[in-house]
Structure formats: C-alpha cells, structure tokens
Amino acid sequence: HADSAAEMPILLVLTGGHVTAFGPNGNRNISASDFFRFHMTTTRADNEIITHAHFPIPAASSGYSFAEFARRSGDYAISAIAVLMEVDDNDLISSIGVAAGGIASCPTKLSDVEKVLLGKSLNATDIEQASEICKNYVTAPDDVHAKLDYRKYLTSKLLAKALLEAKKSKISVIFDQRSFSPWTKRFLISSAPFAPPGSLVKRTSCPSSSNLFFKKIPCVVLPEPSIPSNVINLPDKLK
Image (cartoon, rainbow, N blue to C red; front, side, top):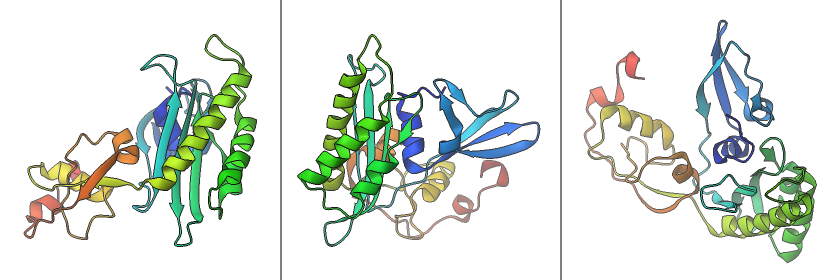
C-alpha cells in the first residue's frame, strides 16, 4: 500500500529494488525510484496488479542497520533510517546506501548523505556533516505525532546511530540445508549467492525480509555431498 513510513518500501528503495506489475499488456518492472509517488500512491496503472517485489541481496561483506522511532510499539515510524555499508581495508567507506521513511510523502533515498560519506572514515565530523544534510530531506508537515523541527532532529540522531551500527556490523545468516522441501531449497539457493557453490542451504530462522537484511545471526553453511537431480531440476511449474 506504499505507506511512506512502512519498513518494506524503505528496504525496496535502499536496495535499489523493483516491483513487477501485471496488466493487459503483460508484465513490466518498475524501479523503486519510479514506483512511489505520494502517500499510498504509486505509478501502478489502474488495470495492473503488483505480483512481485524484488529486493537485491546485499553483498556478504555489507554492514547494516535499521533504526526507527515510534510513539508506541508497533506504530508506523515517526522517522526511520536504513543503512547498508561496505568498508575497505583502509577503514574507509567504499559503498553506502541510506534510505529513510516517515519523513516525507515517499520513502526516500538520501543521496546527498551517501555522496558526502563515500570514501570517509566516519569520524565525528563526518557524522555531524551527514546528520545536518539529512535534515534537508525531512519535509513532512507538523501533525499529531511530531512537528517538523522535531522530526528533523530525530532523523539526524537516528542516522548517526545507524551509521555507527552499520560500520560495526556484518551480514551473517545461519544456513542448514537439511529437512527443507526441494522447492524451498531451490528458492534459497537463488537467494544465497554467498554460500559455497553447490551447497543446499536453509535458514534456521523464519526467512522474513527484515531478518534477511538486518538480523545479526551467526553463520554456518552445511553442504550436502549428494544432491538429488529432482532438487536442482524442478518442474517448470515450480520454478
């Protein structure tokens, strides 16, 4: 439903994903940057339905963080920040993605924040500069939850927290290929490019989207020496 404060739209924007819309003329892919237009408003045509949402899997070396604040547990966020980050051998940021929700009429990629942090070490000055820049993206008007100035302040603090957490963390997922159905194994093979080639894998926890991108879980991959042909070569109707 494209709520600007919902987590899934933020992740779609952060990862540069896209949705697939199906209509009278067949399928068409719409990038996240082109999909969201306003609160509850997208570029989906009236005679189309959304059949898929595609989230590119981050690099295994990525650090990550998702920080949000709501007045009550379970409420939509007054402000939310998501960060994906890679750091090189010199402890400098080599790749970074930053997206926010609840701060404007659409989930927003903070491109200027990304540009100012690329190649930086993320010291106090870098964080302060990025935190000031992010306030420019906060355009949500005053409402019953927060005034504009408070939302700007909150977003800058969430960004600082998320940046530090992302630099310290690294995506890590438990995999165990045993006792999963062939269809699930097939899905997880395509979803786990960082697993050793030929390994069948499964998540030992529920493979929700938030877990996939932002849960810090110890990692182990258990290969299966003998892979039945019907596991890899599924019928077309199951692919």
